[in-house]
Amino acid sequence: MSRNAIQIDPNAPAQPLSARAARALAIGLGTTALMWLLSYVAMLQPGEFVGEAIFILTLALLVLGGAVATMVDGSPRWSRSMRLGIEIGLVSACINLMLVGSLVDADGASAGVWFGGLFVVSIILGGVGGLLGTVAKRLDVSRVNWIGALAAVCAVITFLMIVSGGIVTGFEAGLAVPDWPNSYGHNMLLYPLSEMVADLSDGIFYEHAHRLTGMFVGLAALTLCVMLWWGDRRSTLGWLGTIILLMVIGQGILGGLRVTGTFTMSDNPDLLSPSTALGIVHGVFGQIVLACIVLAAAIASWTWVSGPAPRAVEGAGPARFLAWVLVVSLVLQLIIGAIYRHLTSDLEYEPSRTTPLLMGHIAMAALVALLAVVNGIRGWMDDQPIMRRLGMAMLVIVTLQLALGVVATVLVVQVHPDGVIPRSEVVFTSMHQANGALLLCTAVLMAAWTHRLTTAPASRLQSAAVV
Image (cartoon, rainbow, N blue to C red; front, side, top):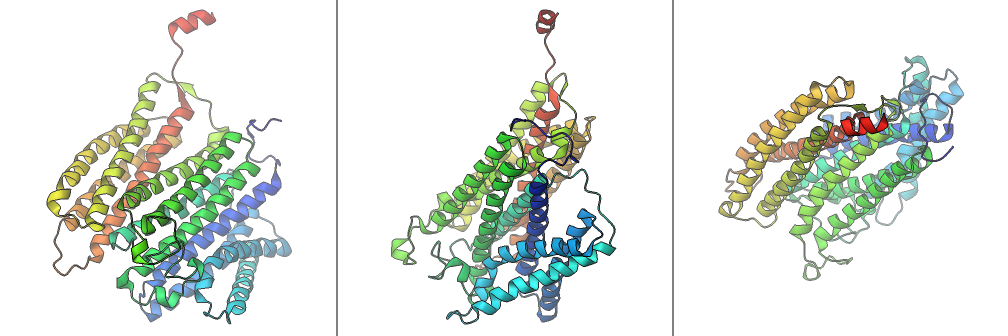
């Protein structure tokens, strides 16, 4: 069978090894992403008791991940269940190597303890979870394409990176760490945790955590690229995975050059020239990367592969056009918003110089809202379940986006004589940015599914020719 052939039956035994690998990777990466999220919250110093509770919950997630691996497998054998849980622990431990280096002493004396302990604890907790999963209810995942599930998990990880990037911009911490790829002369993976969280007001934690999350995204993109080539028979999806990997690599380079302005390992301010322009491109391009990963997840899903054939629909052409107009409008809106945020934070432009941008952003928001409502209603009234869900999601997200935009604008235009950025402002501007990313992803999905499910009816002339 050719590589371009599409596997129709999700229960067919084709490529079982790739499916099992994708399942372990999807659960392992998803579990670790949740662990990183909780660790991020714990580092914000919520209090001794709360911090300890979050730490315990972080470890419990490994047990949960192992249990989920057994529940989706459905095997009653303890040996197999333990092995499945251990696989999740190993995947998580390999990823968490990026964090453990920050706990190693400068002389490396504790390296063996930390790295060895990481694998031992992860394997034990994952294995225990695998055993516990044998007594839990089996999860029906017969309609899950694990390659698509892996892509969806990678999209979530990328979304978390965008959120962390929004927090960096919100706190104006983009240049808190002056060098790259090092961090204050340290290897990025070995930058001491004690220095990272010593003073949250200096922004180092937010910036360095964003860098580490970016590395997580890079690892996830590499994994996804390999699995798309290995586990899916469509070469177009493999090439999409390759493009995504290259985009992620480019995004990382953009982020680094935004800090240094040139390729250098030095942290000497005289040799560095931070670039606001690259910061703007970096912020916008990250959301485009996320949208591409979401698109890959949709194309890899069984709904896309084995769903109904495209049907002839009157007005399919205008519907596709409106869907892509919304996508383009959202990208333009992102660019305007990114320019405004970076000019006000990086270059500290006076309000009189940035007001036209703010007004343009608001005016563009009205156009985007109109297009989103039109597309949302069209999707909501469609007879295909996936389109109805996307239509409803778009209407909800755009409504929330408008509300967040109003609150964020009110907070941003306020003057802070002490120069301290209120946490409320960072929260709402970051939520506005993150929700905008969700809106872009929903628009891309709607455009893609509109192409997948509909086609323009044949003209009378074409029909006559066929007859």
